Length: 430
Ligand code: AMP
Ligand code: MG
Image 1 (tube, protein in one colour):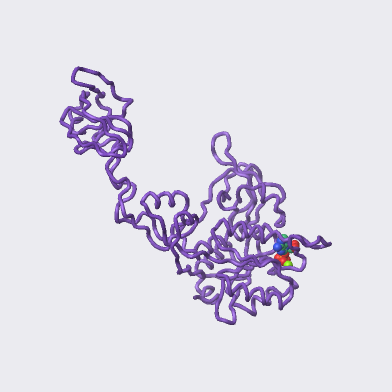
Image 2 (tube, protein in one colour):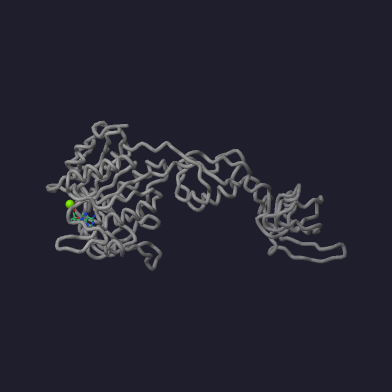
């Protein structure tokens, strides 16, 4: 397990007072070590879990060469002459059972989609391309010249998944398609990384819990609820620790209890510069923690490190800023990738898409800015994006309207209307 100082020393130009968003990502990717404990779960309960081992296929999918179309199966060698073919229909192969007869040159077998290819046949002409000509000896079909190649419309045994080969790789986060694939192999259980436990609490004397009576100067806690949603979407086990008042004894109890139960602690608030509270002091006392000023907006102050317990356990700490949008942005930019790494996921980072900005955006070079936007399709099918109202770092309503974030990179300056910008879509994430 690396200390903050060790990770810091491994990064060129590390400056906690002016860390780039990219620098934060690098720091975290070096700090986090994946969870190694795993468990077996039923396919039914495996959505969004991460595979702890490759899933080796016990079978071929499909199990036999079979037809991709409703049509007539024949030996493709007869196409070599390049002429139209006239073939006698000698039987019918239905899906789900093998057709047992033999087929001579000049003959074919009527076949249904998914039916096993009769022995010796490798090509299927789709029904719609044939002409049926009944004669005294039974049905004949003709197929035009130049239409088919040998092997057309035949699916190979094992072309989807080969017996004995990995069908799914360790690190795969199981989505609906992966669950279907595992099920198609007859696999009822998979070995997955145990769930990551995340303890969350909000800090600040002005923060009210739901059910508290409103009072002047106080605000209801929103951060815990957005975090709860974000973490649940990610498949984490969330430990909700409520709101913790700005008192050393309460903060110490909360951090220690969280570190005892969880792999990760996410607190919000109390990490700003000049904050007159005890949160930062307690993080320092209980752990190995870096306090950063990140060159980004929103989300400048952040604390990251480990919090230890007297019993020798420790948990990774993300001390996020207090402003509600800053919490969501720092979560998406840093915490989410870090949690995926902790879960052992090998998924690629969320892709950035290009969209045309419908309006001019002011942007200072030297920091990464995230603006809330609505991405839509323009008349020509390309993507366009508009900013959703007030971009204040406490304004959640513009986050609710948004379906993505516009990412204005560190070196980037003002954006003109009509210019392309990078966008990160929320689909499946928020
Ligand atoms: P702080 O980072 O603690 O200085 O908080 C910055 C701003 O975010 C202040 O206006 C706080 O009232 C607000 N804030 C902090 N925590 C929360 C929370 N859990 N829910 C809503 N607003 C918060
Ligand atoms: Mg505060």
